[in-house]
Length: 561
RNA sequence: GCCCCCGUAGCUCAGGGGAUAGAGCAACUGCCUUCUAAGCAGUGGGCCACAGGUUCGAAUCCUGUCGGGGGCGCCA
Image (cartoon, rainbow, N blue to C red; front, side, top):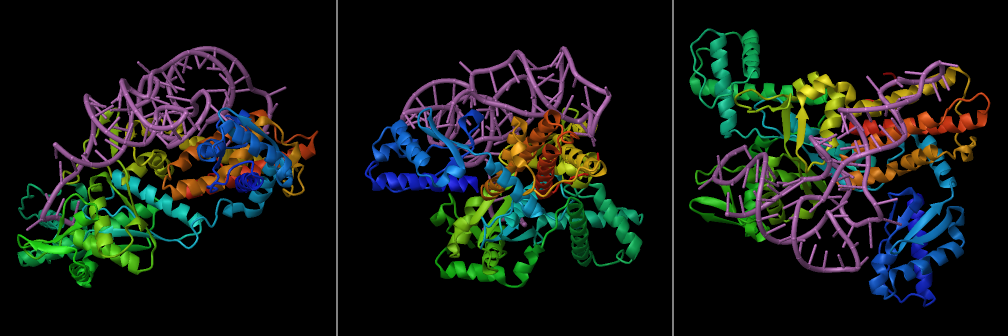
């Protein structure tokens, strides 16, 4: 929109200056146009003169003057560009005719729910893999953070026109010692439920959810496993424990607004022979060698700092072998953009996973791995210690009970994935009215209420094209319109940069500007129906943007509060 | 020992080459006979951890130091 047109105008000015010999011929780079922080610096700004000054051998300020003069006189953009000036060390600032903001409102009204969508990621087939927790306990608050990041990124890619799949990788390999421990723990609880003496192993799972599963099995199957052969029973119980846990995780995530297109079983990779095939391929490509009876991936050839075992000396494949097969499978299914959202304990796996992908001949640069930092839970300022085995974790389900889905999603999304996130349950419980999410939702509810009142009082919202939008001249109206105009760019920034937390900041900005507008500008005025009409168009556009924004974050947009 | 993340207002954090560094919360002062006060306006509050370097320009990039959090496997 406006930004692209300005970049185009600057490019033309630069090219014509070079044609006329006023500027020496250099390659024209991508022209960055941004919204200046200080509104006195105009609606848009570019630093192109400063970045090109050295190469063009002209002082930045002078180059800016040359370009500004041409932008003023070239004529083509005059309807849009009202004034161009040069400021500071060589910024070119653009003051636009207000008509671009009116065009924005018309655009928002026309596109409605699709305002913000684009083709910025057209042709991209994105596979987002996230959460992927072990099926040995409920979804934790930490995994939930990865869930919100991954799900929101998926929504952003959808808005950018990509084909998107969400996938959960289940670490259900049969040889997992964790899963066997989990199965043993379930057997113990099962026996205890039936009144049989049984001792929980030291590294057993103490969580109450294990007992819950045992009760469920007793209720369903009674004591029929009591006399079963021990090994056989352990295998069966490990499987049942896993199935129950996956079902619980699925339900908890669904309640959190996260649904996966596929729950991808690690075990299926082993059973289908894909792990063996990947290992074979690595050998063929000369990327694997034997040492100490084990098979090693030469990951150091691809930037890792150590070679990694693929097959243990007992012949069993390692986690990285399965991961290599999994990522190969992703590419083989036609995905050209792989995004993995992993927890902080996985940062050491980035290099080796990328190495495995490259060693198999796939483009490692198409794989982006996002590591989010830990969520620490506090209760009344005290750190809550968490251990899955000891069973004193706070689950996603409990978190939602405490603070609700909207607040949980908003909070877990609010911080950059690079920052550790402190979540104080006590605070969230006692001061939930002060959560920023309410601030944003309140803006939406206020708008809905306003539009209901307008309807009752006979103030119809005119079609945007018919409204006298030029009457919107109050600074609060202008600022709000600018924010609404920026939404499509924000989607692309948050999406392509993989920074979904930007949405929370954008939502708070938008809400703040609406609240300010609401305070400063009375919308319904019997004495000025035309102004009222224009303002109602602005209000409805704002509802559209807030609605699209909240939907993208997976947070509800209430009509009443 | 090696690796990752963080260090910005009293607190929790945005900003991650650009102009006068922001928000929420907390504190204080105002604003509801009129569309939702879950709101708005104002005040106070900062050596952007520290030291070098790169750059026309550094909170932002690079090096190092210090402080905090997390991770290192032929576990998954």
